[in-house]
Image (tube, rainbow, N blue to C red; front, side):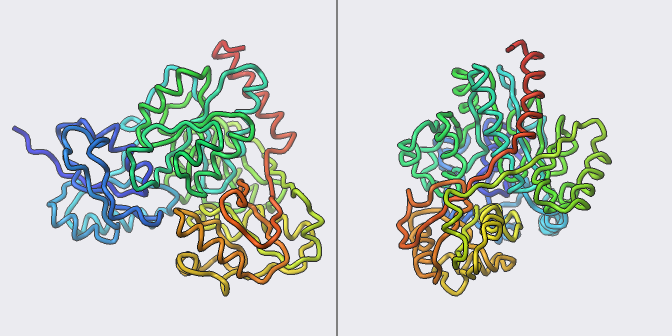
Amino acid sequence: MVQKRKVIIMGAAGRDFHNFNVFFRNNPSYSVVAFTATQIPDIAGRKYPAKLAGKQYPKGIPIYPEEEITDLIKKFNVDYVVFAYSDVPYNYVMQKSAIVNAAGADFVLLGPKSTMLASKKPVIAVCAVRTGSGKSQVSRKIFELLLKKGIKVVSIRHPMPYDKDLTTQVCQRFASYTDLDKYNCTIEEREEYEPYIDMDGIVYAGVDYERILRTAEKEADVIIWDGGNNDFSFIKPDLLITIADPHRAGDELGYYPGEMNVRSADIVIINKVNTARREDIETVRMNIKTVNPTAQIIDGQSTIQAEDKKMITGKRVLVIEDGPTVTHGGMRYGAGLVAAKEFGAKTIVDPRPYAVGSIVDTFSKFPHLTNVLPAMGYGKKQIHELEQTINDTKCDVVVSGTPIDLTRILKTKKPVVRIKYGVGTKTAQEIETLLVKFLKMKKLL
């Protein structure tokens, strides 16, 4: 009898669980002894439940802090450590490899052949080079265009299973605000699901993507994979659109696994060209052509609108931005700050002196953030701390660059101006032309 190889999966409550489900769960050659967690607060210390782990794991699988990886490798005599999270620079990945190798284990990256599911329906995947490049607004525009053409379409979102009880998040379907409450969604989850609900769309997410895919296929002619971070698709795409960000020119060849998305893409959209420097746009274009000369390149505009821009003009403004974009996405600002400056804010207030609890920890962990407040909300306690930080900040108005209506989930004494951003008209027309070609090829038009 061949001895099972012992495995640890390094993750962040997303691809780690997917890789386990599709490659390791029913694989008799391996025994996954642990997950490690990073990036997301309060994930470590939990278990991947026995109900989801399968017959080989009757006690479930423990989740430890990533900082313990060296001790875990030695404690469990681990053979392989699988790296399974995204939006990290190459030197970070190889540093993890050095740590793992020094502890005696092999360092492994699983690719598409081992992890991509095959769909019975045509799949359009929208991925990116970095978190916050604008893939979700492109995904939603594709969704909208398909609906207008009478195509039944469902979006499947990259996982964000942050609930303490993962068995409640196996296969989630979001079609109403009630569903957001039903699944106890975090702010990050709401940022992705609410915009679909606002356009009468349907989006799936969860833990078990085989089950999610098969369920979604029952009500869709076309499936959109709406990627997370800069991860590659969990589902094999018939059309891969990758979004590049000239505000972080060069990252398309320097971050894992974003470069893979560039190299694999059928179409690359260089987004935000209306707010980026020309030299940065051309750097991105050159890098794309170097690694993927056959990809079609589109210059994409990202438009910004304020609900009431007069409320911003001449005021002391607290800017709130999409959390992942400005934290591990590395951006110093987002649509909120761009809008505050464009619409004439008198002062951008530094939120750091007013931060409380875990919000203080967030600023310590991401010192590049100086004049924006990330919309952190990975649980009721953190949402309350975000609320208190907002209320304590000495400002006239809050400019919210997060895609959701924050007032639905927290109470603030300050007036809030929502900033909405989407795909520009010319970019939408180019995307529509490509979609028509794709639908005709698939005999759906």
